[in-house]
Length: 557
Ligand SMILES: Cc1cc2nc3c(=O)[nH]c(=O)nc-3n(C[C@H](O)[C@H](O)[C@H](O)COP(=O)(O)OP(=O)(O)OC[C@H]3O[C@@H](n4cnc5c(N)ncnc54)[C@H](O)[C@@H]3O)c2cc1C
Image (cartoon, rainbow, N blue to C red; front, side, top):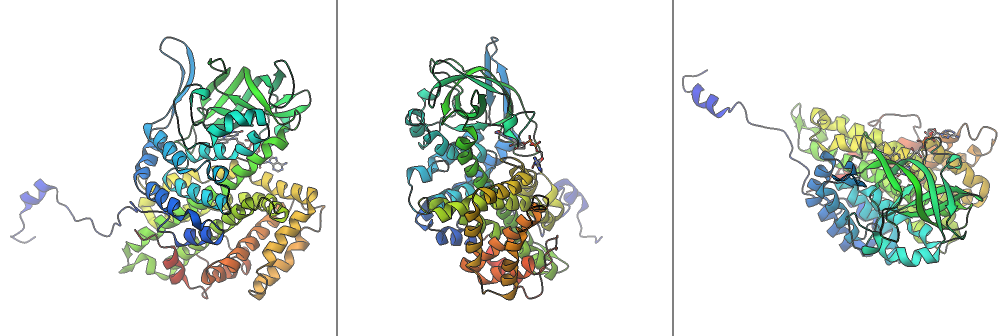
């Protein structure tokens, strides 16, 4: 220590060091404007007309709503069974930030756009909004998705639809705990899962009894329970219950038409790994009134359209989590040096980062291609493609997200493991999309179900994949091998995951080849189709142009 060093002065300022080589937060940044891939795929699949809306919502999701997302997750919802005078109220209270997230999303059309503006590209544009919302908060995306997805099921019964759909599709959010008929805008939840059977809803024991007359749109009383009911402050729920004719679908409001609380009782909230801003509850119906949607005994058929849409959103949501994690990893590594060189320029880190970027873009391309199929309402081939590829994508993309978010966390190093960083929230959120709305095996079994019921769906899928034939020997060999995977029907169920894995990657490759950036497409084919069996990220072959892939994916603030 030199004589010039003033020890006392430094100690009094606690000035031990200067903070160096710690990149700042990736905020504020617009996840639309800073995402070349997202812009590209939205335009490619006809959603380009919504760019101004997406840009505006991106500014919200990467700006003010970031803090709202943090607050809504730090202070999770609480359940209040009674008021202070002893009346049963069954109320879940949220942090004001949760309502802010919901209001901004509803006003932007996240749950309503394709229903109110059904032009080509509308499902793609809405998926873009949902994707952006996931950057701010995933928990509130759950009721937004359910509200969006409930529309086709409610539309099946005109007497109910006339009253409810204008409110479901309005751009008004009203989070007050008051009767639905006093609100200009409502939200919808879904309650199918029971203790004795979630995947197998035929095991449901909740029963429904007609109040007077049976039939679509008529009132019934429900007695039973649901083991999972997310967003229990929604204004109404699509519920499955048994009638004399079998499993049936109902719309069950939280308030009765006479203005009294419906017999819908919240037992408790689940203490979840992630998805903390969203409340997920256990509920009981003790004679709750509800309207029948569709025919008695046709409940699965009625609710399946809602389930198809929620599965689509699981893909979109997981793709968004992957993008958010990748963007954080790219941002951090580009602002940090190790061993005398920027981290994102170190060859082995480049291999990992480019691999994450490829996976993330492939998930997005797959999801928005399904959005395009959903937009093609009059085209039967596209509808068949959507039915089969939604199950494939829901299985594959949702399974890829947890591993990717963990790798992104590792790119960031120790601070990536600390709760102040966005990665822990993304990591803890990632598994749920694979579990709810039909877990992994159920999606694979659904692929086989579609195969049996609609053999033309496989043809539609293989034709779509085959559009990219001629790209390379590797790709051509991969698609040639696909039909044989379905041949041995005796072992198909046992092999279903393996079959779906291969079809999923071929489908992603096909989209990237047909419509994407050639460097990303080539890298995907070389790493996923040529080297099946590589399980860790960072195993790209030397032919891959990592630098340009990283450059394309870099979120520039
Ligand atoms: C946070 C959260 C929120 C939720 N919110 C809601 C909600 O709002 N509404 C709602 O209705 N539900 C909700 N769920 C429930 C969810 O949809 C179910 O947990 C899910 O469908 C699985 O059902 P289960 O838990 O009964 O598992 P099970 O049906 O017992 O399945 C367990 C495992 O077995 C596999 N499996 C099942 N059958 C087969 C088979 N034949 N062959 C091979 N494998 C099989 C499944 O894929 C799964 O991996 C929520 C769940 C979570 C975690």
